[in-house]
View 1 (cartoon, rainbow, N blue to C red):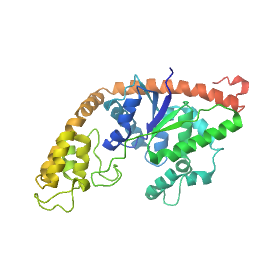
View 2 (tube, rainbow, N blue to C red):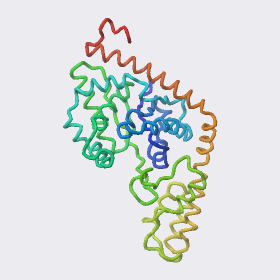
View 3 (cartoon, rainbow, N blue to C red):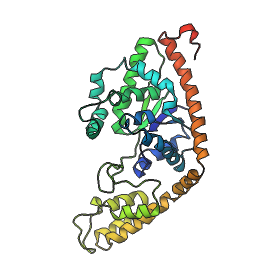
View 4 (tube, rainbow, N blue to C red):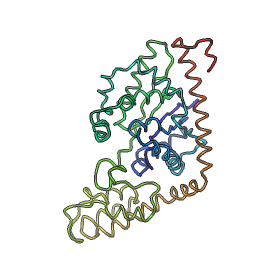
Length: 338
């Protein structure tokens, strides 16, 4: 049976952290055996709020791919490609822009949330590129015939907007495009070391997949614990402690039970608990860190993955664009250039 096609991706704006790992990367490793998976390095989308720092975006393309391969994404099963090297995506974005109103984009809950977070970047001067990035995202998905898009609940409005665009396009030009389905991840967003609901570079509360043992230890030692626990033998509440929260991710079931019981009984000091957690995280991430070190020493592997993946994605995009232009009556002279 032919596998359904997944299209997903990330913006190259920094290294990936454990929030990305538990939120999406684990899922992608699993799904690559069940689906035909395409992952784009969304450099064009990254420029919507990094337009004045293109060097940052360029440098992080390789960082992102190294994180992908380190955590188990297999280029023999998953196609990894660079968004800007698929010009058909940009072309389709222009066609789609005629099908979406500005008012509809402004009502998109995900866009509204992200605009509020980017006030320091735009102020009141929202760029056309940022407001319209859901249109570009719809083009990313459909130019490769994406049928399934793994995403969290916060991304659901973006996928629904894509589905609306597909329905509008097909109602005008015929049944050409596939309407993608969302694959809702069961994994929840991982909190930051400071207890913030979001883990991120700008917040300084993240543990990165590429962090050294020393960096991991230093960060874990700064993690927020039960604010009501002053002395070592005070009774603790692991439900409000970020160290206990991370133990649930990186510590075995039996040891986790012991951690919580000792904390509640005042028999476990926070410093010792943090040191134990740091060691568990270091050991958990060790295989990824070692794989990444190998890739850093062999950049030609990353080049090969991106060149081959982009060539494959481009070929698929050309086939679908040919059908789109035929449906839109834009196939002049038999569409000889395609």
